[in-house]
Image (cartoon, rainbow, N blue to C red; front, side):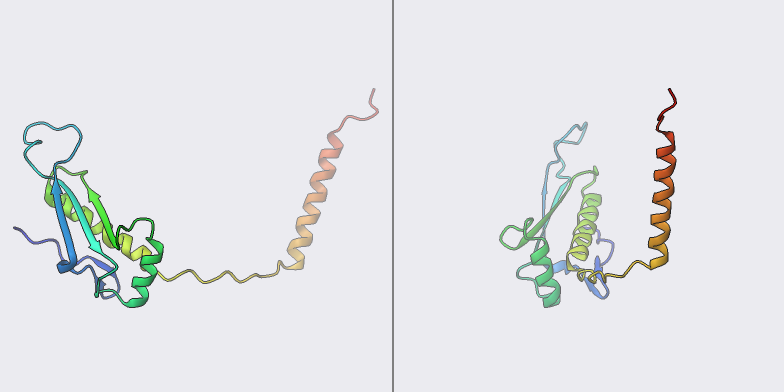
Length: 145
């Protein structure tokens, strides 16, 4: 079997451990033609997030929290069947899993620091509101009749 196109990097020097990936192949659904009912082109990639040793503990905990809704017994599953070749579906599934883990292990964003609006900007906003209000008031047809 030909080799995959290299390690799938999650972030920095951490990449998907090839030994911990579980592959399953099945027949794709949908329209086909010749060769469609004989090739197992759909790919299901499973990664045991709960038991992996390849992720730093902090990342692992973060990912377990963020992906809690997707996990079944601590295992995350990615399916790919958009390509007709099994090899390309394997590539797609691996890239998708790496992207999913990269997003799930990302550090939380820094909390927003509240800043005050400068007085000049606030005064200009109020002046513009007043001018707009005067313009609209001028459009109301009063005592012209």
